[in-house]
Image (cartoon, rainbow, N blue to C red; front, top):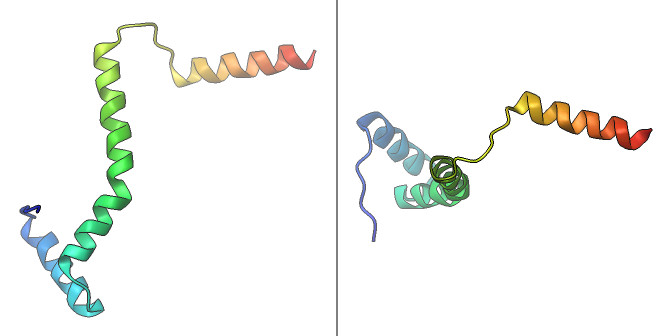
Length: 76
């Protein structure tokens, strides 16, 4: 069993959606959780690893440069 409080505007939107579609608010809450749980897990696990692991870091630009340079070398 899960109980949660939503901001009033979200609660109203959810109630209106449920009413218009003949589904329950619980149905839509469950769908939203199922749709996004994996993204949330990935985000928080990555954040935890960044805080715990103080190893070498590379910017996205550095990663792209490394990859591009490796592709050039392999093509030669």
